[in-house]
Length: 377
Image (tube, rainbow, N blue to C red; front, top):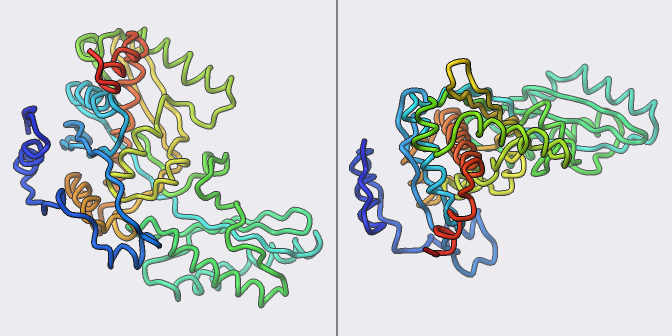
């Protein structure tokens, strides 16, 4: 596929549809169906906020080409990711490794004493099958994968992990966890203070999610040829490496950051909003590690690691017209596509990292934002 650069968004859209053999409904000129949205997406609805959507790519992921829909108001972001996509694709593309880690919910119980806490913890660990059966009664799509219990003082915290198939699944796991919590209360004579006790840890950056993972664990890697680094990224592998080392490794350590990366959140936020994901889960998506190494032949090895990517391809905002179109562009709408979607996000994050770090290495970050973010010549 080779989409030309057209002067209008309408022509760009038509070219994209033709290249991907899609016939997307034209939702550009009408708003959301208020009756549908008000029932399950937004209360007290007064209107719709419009955010521009651009397209980056093509990006080769596991030998297949993808165009990446990005919703953003940050000028230069789409252009930067596109440049990263070009460098990656000209070097043969990106390899992906995706692992389903499961959606979590973590209730907290008041148990009055440490001895009672030990007793409740033991009961939970010995009755996982009973709790799994309870969860399955709430949805045919859910299955319990893991249970982690921690007791401190008068409290017991439990972290349940669930497979929610192709849905992001927070509502699903919350309903299941409430039923399990009722069971624990009944069998142990304790009180569930909150079905969400921050041991999830949901929509917050935490070392628990970094180390034990949540949602999907995604790794992506590529080798950028030194000639491509010089021609497309306007720098050298060694200069890129030095910026990566100082910024992503040492700078992140100095600041106590949970993200040893350049700007994962930028790429993930733009993709999440475009495809109907929960934007609050950008918090978990901002965590992760970028690595770089100059190889013996002078080429540049690049990888990214996302420990807690929370995504779905069914349910929630993925059913909204425009967001579903964006998933269709990626070939990731509907059942059986969520792991593919997670992998594409990994590839896009890598492209975004590569381009930003190259811009810093060549000293063009300010001028790019002046030209594309402010409209200055």
